[in-house]
Length: 311
Ligand code: FES
Image 1 (cartoon, protein in one colour):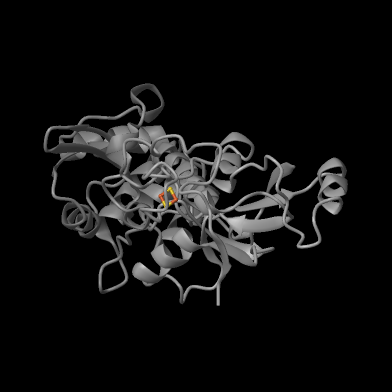
Image 2: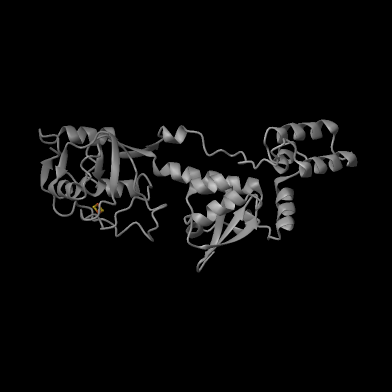
């Protein structure tokens, strides 16, 4: 048996918008006096070429924040802007690559909220969540962050580039949760399978799908009840090759949890890898808030299977 991970359609989708959710500094009258003053002063220094200043002005006229426009034109660095904003708002500068991002902190605010706010939680201590933001002057984004968590926020300023890099990493993790796992029988398995009884069901020592997902596909698949058909956290979503047979225990549990209406949704602890199949791993430790995936399921299906059909 061979398990391979293949890209799902979701994984080919573009990642989060890495552009700044720019806060326009333009006033209702179309002119931002602070931005204009800053650009006039910069121009007077002759340290920045008139062409670059004109480009920055063009960007701010289109709604881009002047700080972001300066970065885009190479007039300022992301780190330099972070330092400037930190001083202006009396906040610490957070060097994310050296401070690091704690997994338990980043899970406390939804990724979508973080993307909109260009923010990343990097540490949590008691009820205080430390969050690095790119623009502490974006009060709407700060309010959204406060509403998204019960923790008190302690803000710092980090480089927008560093925050975006962390958000992209988070988004890739989230996409991977929906990744497709293909289970293919190799030739040896297939020929052995051909020799099985006419019902096409192997009686050999086949691997439970829940264990194959962990061992071969390296998926952090949940199995909270230890593979005993009691929890449904080992659920997977078949995209091809859904087994026709089902254990009585799985059938009863899916019915009891009102999960029978979801096409292709099955319990991986109740399935053997006895034919080609493709599925999405939809219930994984990452992002679940659980401390572990659950006790390792036994090699054999538990409770001892009584095979039946879905219908
Ligand atoms: S039902 Fe709990 S691990 Fe499968």
